[in-house]
Length: 229
Image (cartoon, rainbow, N blue to C red; front, side, top):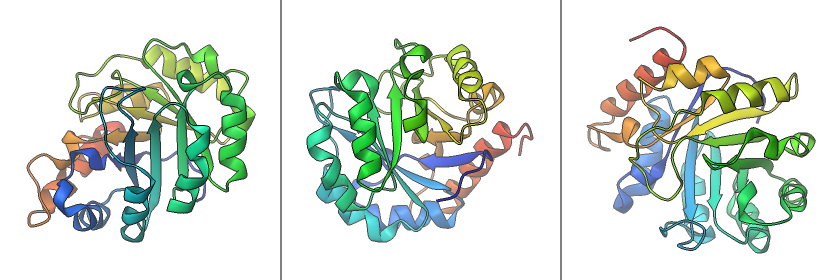
């Protein structure tokens, strides 16, 4: 997994057809997805339940790009090895999920994965100031975590602060929540390079009509790059 700051579109399979995950993953990758984003929720840290390590392991053979696993769970540390064994490439934990995020990031890297740290809308950029040398990705939540399809919360000021803080370190800034062709240019201009999109990618398409996924991905990417399709 090499590093660059080109815009990457990471469809969230939380918006996919739950009865057809394998084909859905293959369809979005064939239609131009750069990463595959997997939202893990525990019904405790966030008010929803989704996937566990066994589901992630089942997704893994279908993912040929990057499997980006976002843990919205607490605690995190007892499950790090399970998600490593399941094949996660990037494992992201919330700074709010426990008192020892520094140790959590060390453990994620120690298990052979890229380490991500996520910030809820109410958490300032400064919360990760002392974590940058342990971090490969910072996920800025632009909705309150727990459900897809929420309205975008403007976090461009936080994104710019993080971009300045990161400097020349090889750290991705990922945006999760409410990303579509209208919001993509706002976050990209502020310094984000990985855009998670759920309903904005999957709307209007299916495994029988994957071209709609491709059009949606191209429109988000073009908007983020300042060129409307």
